[in-house]
Length: 233
Image (cartoon, rainbow, N blue to C red; front, side):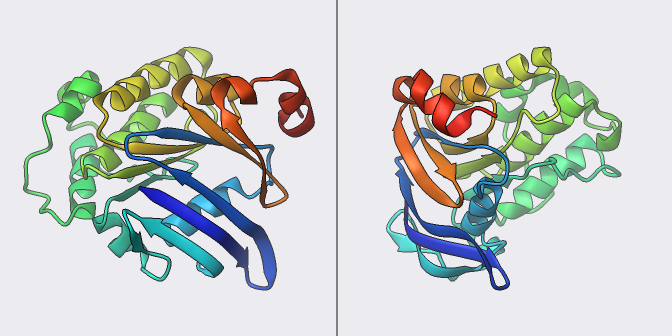
């Protein structure tokens, strides 16, 4: 599904990622963990084509997409929920969802997949509400739903719990567990909330100073020595 090899990425002359290599299988949830400033968001932007890579390869379903622009990657099945959500606040809930259809090369007049409202039932009654008037948790769920309507092969989630209250985080976890159970999308989850990430992910990688410094299944990454060395503040 996703195979990243020796990825080097930066901003201008400043290199942020130094030879990052990892992978994710079909319908697998993989966590990318690490403290602030370790290069996790840079990695997500590089995978989506928002930052060019200086070296290395990004292969999706056997195809090297390293040189493709963002919109081509989206049409090939990469969906991105950025840190900070970036919904269209002045548009309605329905319009935001329909913008997601465009990512899949469809028309905004096409039907919103019915499964959207099974995962997010509250949206059906609030399609005409301005997205900017939703709560922070609702905006995060809208950002995820907007990407899911495009039916991506790979869903990139960058810090989805950031700024959310514990009760909302639990709701978001339940939604993503349903997405995982459907078995239709691989997910790459960047998180600092270790408990949230490892509840969803079967395995993960730990980043430090732009490199992968540890990897393992969820139980291995929960070990005290791994947390103390790489994840505690």
